[in-house]
Amino acid sequence: MKTQHLQAIWKITEELRGAEQLEAALSSGLEIIADVISCEEGSLWLLNAEDSRLYAVVNIGKNDITGISIAKGQGIAGSVVDSGDSVIVEDCSKDERFSSSVDEETGFKTKSLICVPLKNSYETLGCIQLINKRDDSLFTRDELELCENFASLIAIAMEDRGVSLLPQKKKTPIITLRNVIKEYPSGDGKLRVLKGIDLDIYENEFLVVLGESGCGKSTMLNIIGGMDSLTEGTLTIDGKDFSHPTEHDLTEYRRNYIGFVFQSYNLMPNLTAKENIEFISEICQNPMSADEALAKVGLTQRAGNFPSQMSGGQQQRVSIARAIAKRPRVILADEPTAALDFQTGQEVLMLVEDIVKNQGTTVVMITHNVEIAKMANRVIKLKSGKVSSIRTNAHPMAAADISW
Ligand SMILES: Nc1ncnc2c1ncn2[C@@H]1O[C@H](COP(=O)(O)OP(=O)(O)O)[C@@H](O)[C@H]1O
Ligand SMILES: [Mg+2]
Image (cartoon, rainbow, N blue to C red; front, side, top):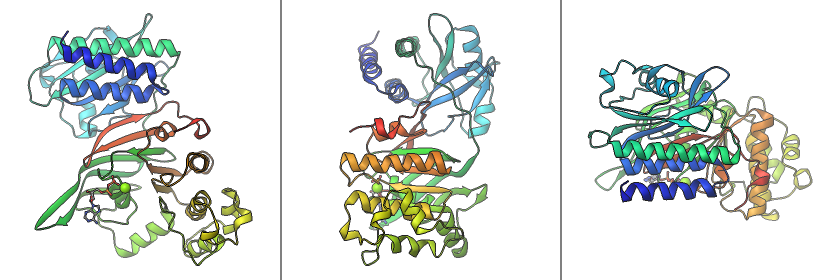
C-alpha cells in the first residue's frame, strides 16, 4: 500500500475511534479518501432492509444526492451490494449495469467510478462510491484497495458501537438553490463569493451550515432570506421561481415566511422585550402574541425590560421570540450562539431544538462550531463559495448533551 494511502487510513481510523457521532466521522473519512484519490464526488449508500433500497447518506462534492434512493440490484451500486464484489468502471456510459437515473435527477455526469461494498461479518450494509478522477485519469487497483480498507473500517466502527445508520428518505424541498452565483463589485472587477451553490432545504428539518470564516455562509443565508439578491442561478420557494422577486413578493416573504436570528441580536434598544416582539408581529399575517412568544422562550418576567437590562443570552432569547412570533415556515439563524458563553449558548440551542420538534419549523443555522452540527438533521459544509459535503445525521444529538 502507498504511504499516502496508509496515512489516509491512519487518519480515518483516528476519526472513527474518536467520534462521538459516527456520521461526522464517516463524512470526514470520505472527504479524506476523495482528497487523496483526487476525485469529484464520493458517496456512502446504506441498504434499508424494509424496502430493499439503497439510500445515499453521506455525500462529498457539490452534488447533493443525500436521500436519493435506488433499488437493490439497480445500477452499479445496487449490483455491488447484491453481489458483494467491488468494481472499477472506466466508462459508465459503456457499462450495462449503469443506471443514469441519479444523474438525470441531479444533472451530474458520472464518467468513471469505484464502488465497494460495505460488509460486516454477516451481511452487506451498503456501499461506497467514488466518482470521476479530477484529472480524468483511470482509477487504479491501489485506489480500489484503499476504498475497501475504508469500507472495512466503517463496518468495524459500526459493529463496535452497535449503531445502525437509518437511511432517511428524500423529502420534498421547500426551498431550492440551483447553481447560485453571487458576485460583489470589487475594485475594477468582481469578487465571486458564491460559485454555484446547489442546495435543497426540506420541510421541518434542522440544517446546519458549517464553513470557515469568509467562505460565503452569511451571503448564502441572506440570499435565502431575501435580504440580498443572487447574480446568477435559481432560487425557488415552494416550487415557485423566486430568483428575481418583485418588491411586493419580497416584502411578503420576509414578513411572513422567514424569521431571522442574528449573532448580534439586532433588538431595538429603545423598546422593551415585549415591544420588540409586538413591533414585528404588527406587520405579520398570523402572529403569536408577544406574551405567548416570550413565554415560549421563558422570559415572561422580562417583558418590560429594555435590551440593556438583559444578559446576552436573554437578548438572544428575545430575538428568537421575535422570530417565532411570526410563525414563519423557516428560521434563518446566523451564528446565534457565537457571542454567548457555553451555558447560555446551550440554552439557546435547546430553544432552537424545541422550535424544530414542536412547532414544525425549518431551521437553517450557520455555525463554525462543529460540536453544534451534531444536533442537525443534515450538515452541509461550504468551502470557498461551494458546497463541499453534505451528510445526514440519522441520530441527531440532543442540545442538552452537546458541549464545547
Ligand atoms: N456586501 C459585500 N460587498 C463586498 N464583499 C462582500 C459583501 N458581503 C460579503 N462580502 C465578501 O464575501 C465573502 C464571504 O462573506 P460572508 O458570506 O460574510 O462569509 P461567512 O459568513 O462565511 O464568514 C467575504 O470575502 C466578504 O468579504
Ligand atoms: Mg458570516
